[in-house]
Amino acid sequence: MILRCRTLGRFVVGLIFLFLVAELARSQGASTVSSLNIQGDRLWKTLQKLSEFGKNPEGGVSRIGFSEADLTGRTYVIGLLRETGLEVRIDPAGNIFGHRNGKENLGTLLLGSHIDSVPHGGNFDGDVGSLGAIEVIRTLSERRITTRHPLEVVIWADEEGGRYFAGGLFGSSAAAGLLPTDIAERQDDAGDTLADWLRRMGGNVSRISEAKIAPGRVAGYLELHIEQGAVLDKANIPIGVVQGIVGISLRTCNATGFANHAGTTPMSIRRDALAAAARAVLAVREEVRAEQGRQVGTVGWMKVEPGAPNVIPGRVTFPVEVRDLDAEKIAGIGERVLRRFEVIGREENVQLECTPAVLHAPALTAPLFQQAIRFSAHDAGLTSLDLPSGAGHDAQNVARFAPIGMIFVPSRGGISHSPLEYSSPEQVANGAEVLFRALLRLDAQLDASEAARQN
Ligand code: HGY
Ligand code: MN
Ligand code: MN
Image (tube, rainbow, N blue to C red; front, side, top):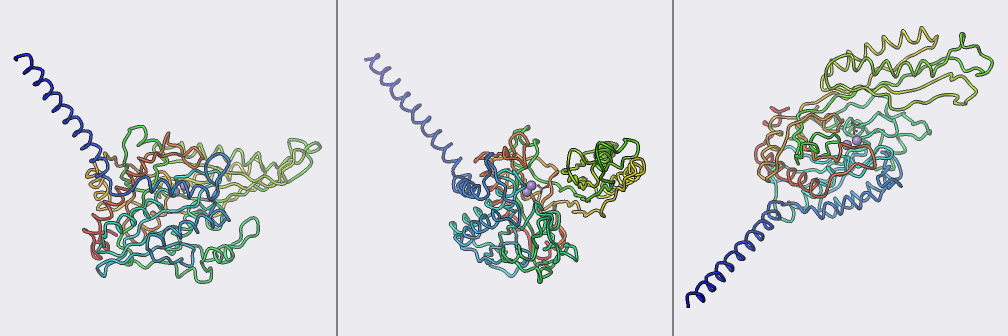
């Protein structure tokens, strides 16, 4: 009898234990699912679909702004925006907007990113923020949530500047009224005109000034993006709260020497443009390294003419790009680099000249937006870290007319602008979830006067 009781007791305890384990597993599973409002698998599928437009053999994309691949990607995204119930319009600069009404007469809350890529780029830079914004709107609609502010998803045109019409951040520069005055006449090396490309994209070069967004119309801008560096990945932290975005200065430089016979021209009288340009590249590196800090400088390409093994190069064209959070530091480095170029030019008997710098100014994110992102990550059970952005983003132009916030998710190994760029489905979903929550927080907290104050 005692034995039977013990057996029964053990059986009951075992049953209770099994029940508790099952309940724990169920509740943990449920909490993972219920803590996410957005649907990560749906978002991932749209990312995979977008990666087909401009797919390259290395597994990434070459979807350069103002290209056939860009047009097909844009058509796909416009379809998604419409499917999501948004009212789509394209502004004269080719920026795509999807509008959703709000309950109150307030400024618009803008969220989005870009879908163009660098040549041989990856599937996450820009795409995560663009499709993440669409997923957020889908989730709001499914839950029948109407925000106080009108919402707009924006897909900025030509963020990467692949065709050299304006050196990147094209669409957001138009929105901030920052495009150069001769923009309407611009052509690229292939002779394609900006006017023609904008027409194909639904824009209109002759009305491009109308793409400018007046201060006050936008209450705030949120952009989700991959980090493109290794800080979050190394620290194993799912969410980055961006403190500010670096400024980027870009000059195009020309070394002009004299093209002559490579066999008969003595070394002592040569005017070798490539030798001068090679010294210029090293001078850029030295001047950037000459002071403490996180500043970076790059010469990313070189065009050598006439370009034959038996001809001394007569002309070389190359860009000089310098980045830092401090605009004065960028300007100081630029001046030092130009002084070095003067000396090199004299010594090499080559004319070394650069265009004035085009500066995408650095921008700080609004403290209220940082806080909304930090708290939203915390509410979703995700750790976060404050960090600066070493990459440029359209948000830095938006900061000219509205307060901004940026959410980063980890990039595996810190690799970006490469087909190897990768963030996992879970990391992408976490980012979109924080975007969803931060948007709702800001919708509750912001009004037009608050937006003006933050700006
Ligand atoms: O170049 C940049 O920093 C950005 O990825 N467009
Ligand atoms: Mn990029
Ligand atoms: Mn980007």
